[in-house]
Length: 135
Image (cartoon, rainbow, N blue to C red; front, side, top):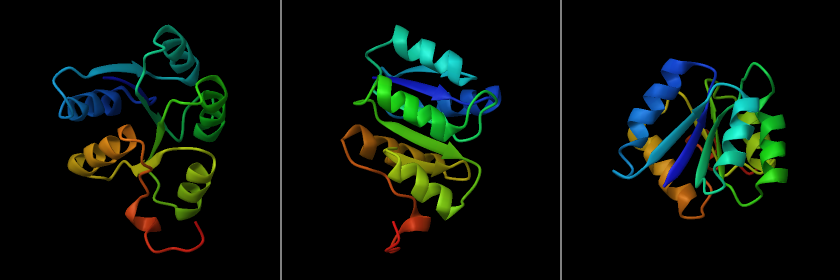
């Protein structure tokens, strides 16, 4: 299994790397600090299984990157990460094709649950959106 983590904070990338090891002993975690690096990584690794994409990046918004990934790699599931729990952003991200939205305040077990769901072809909807009819 191969996962690409895109976040401009190295400590966040390293922390996610450690958490994602809990999925499988054979998981490979690639890292990128910018969208430009991420697009290169995705081109170099067409066997990616999943992307974890930060919503706020220095060179491009997460929504713009989501759109580009969708055009270049339409079958590749993307889970958006954000420090914000803004439900409007969550809805927008999911409506624009993300397979999930996870806040950075989420516990590691819940992140692994979200990743497993998405890897099985499901969509992970954050608890903040549960029971809302406007999604």
